[in-house]
Length: 159
Image (cartoon, rainbow, N blue to C red; front, side, top):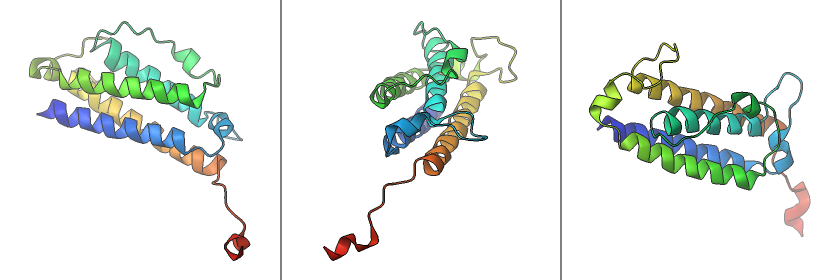
């Protein structure tokens, strides 16, 4: 069943998002920008949570979530523990919503007519999954670039 496969792909990507946020050695660097890097890893995480909470949670799952896209990009720091909690809640909501779609819902028109080219629900879900993975790669790059791991001195093993 395609619903299960899609739900598993979203689950894997959201688990990776949680791992990326947890992998920041210095949690203040989650919100760091530098030079041409205008969106921090934290900002991108907040954006992904808002995006999926709206397009999957509210539109498909009827959660009532109200999106504020501009606020997603405001760069206001959120404690990493709060981000992890939101990711976990989103993961559950996304999996259960997608897995519960009927074939008619999945292959029928996406319930929100917002002028986007992805007219069917399956096409919109594929786009959302690609969008999630795109920003997931950006977060990984941001973390590796602006939050280098703590390293021990070379002579630490001599003690």
